[in-house]
Image 1 (cartoon, helix red, strand yellow):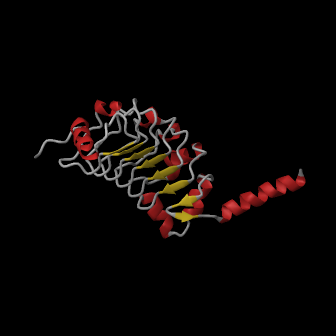
Image 2: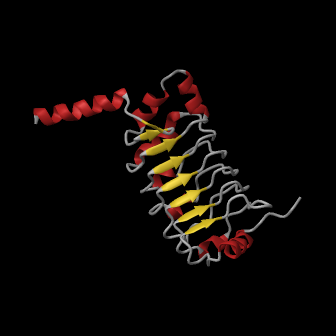
Image 3: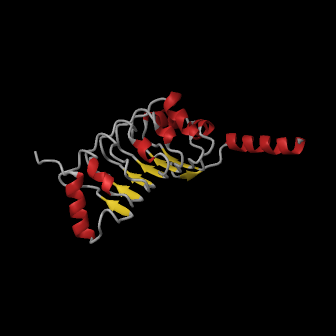
Length: 201
């Protein structure tokens, strides 16, 4: 089996192709390497100006070495073998979008450190229950766009026809769920309650 591509090697290839220096670049695309990247190694720390990093379609198992990426806003890790969200705390103050569909994530532990997260695309993972994992999303007031389709949790409640109401009830900040602009009965109810409160005041 061919040896995995290291981040360092992938960056050299990317610099040759793009004509940019990785340390200066705002967007760095390392997706779909052949052979694939398996580790997010320390070479990532050179990407000090990077705002948009794509590592999708590789064989990465762990999120790591994001400490130097002080300007990172968009991180794309779709189609890897990632099992949890540990390692994101390094970009918790800046990250606005996390694209992490088609991985092996069961729990959302650690997601609440994402203080500015607006967009979370994590379809086709392994989240099975509301419990702590899903409720953690309510701790991110900035979260407005969530794609969760293809998780066992979503499949179960969609089959019962209650997914949108159940999900938005737990994460009231959402404006978009699974690609659809939404206004649920529950939100309308909250809106009228707020209105009523104003009238009574």
